[in-house]
Image (cartoon, rainbow, N blue to C red; front, top):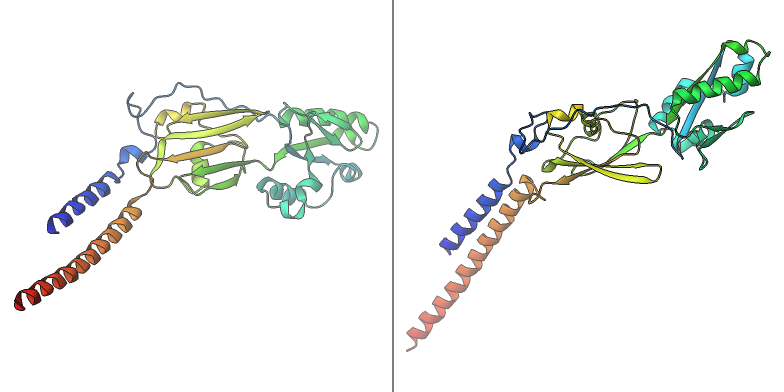
Length: 285
C-alpha cells in the first residue's frame, strides 16, 4: 500500500510539472529564431475597408442651409446616434434599421430622392464623393447647395473571439485594430491557450479563408496578420496535452489523495476484520 501511494504521488507530480508554462510559450514580441518562433515577411498593408453586401451605412448631410440639413437627415442628435450604432448599443431600439442604409444583394443602398446608389466595393470616402455629387445635382439652385458635405460611416462592425479566451463578439470602435488590441478587448488569451497557432476565419463576399500565425513573433507587427477586419473570427486553441490547467491538476491531486485515504481506511477495516476472524478461528481450535 505504501509503495502504491509513492507511485501515485510521483505520477501526479510529473503531471503537474508537465502542465507548467514557460515564458517561451506565452511571451509576446519575441525575436524570431527560425525554429520555434517564426519570422514573417514584411507584407504589412492596411487598406481602407471596402463596403460589402449586408453592411449598414450611417449617412449624415451637413449644410449651412438648415432646410437642406433637415431635408436629408433624420433629425436628432447625430453624434449620439452615430456612437450608438457603431458600438451596437442602439440595436434594442431598432436604431440601426431606422437611421442606416442596408447594402442589398445588388450592392446598392436606397437613398431618398436619389434612388439606387452603388456602394459595394467602394470605400466610405468614395461613397461620400459620389453622394455629394448626386445631391449637388439634385438641389442645384436651392439655398446654399454648394456648401453641402456628407459623412459616411460603416456601422455595426464587429469581430468575434472564441476558444481559449473569454469568448465575445466585440464592436470595432475605430478603423484600425491590431491583433494585440483585439485580444486585449476580448480579455486576453487564457492559460494554456496556444499562442503559436492563432487562427483567423475571414469571409469576403462569400469566400472564406483561414489564416494561421504565431502571435509570439515580433515580426507579426510587419505582417499581413497584424490588422483584423470586420466580421473576423479569431480562434485560439488549447496547447496540445494541456486541455486543463494547474487549477484542474490541483483538484485532481486533491480528489486522488482523498480517494487513496478513503481506500486505505477501507483496507484497514477489512484487514482488521480478516485478522479478527483468523484470531477467533485459531482460538476455537
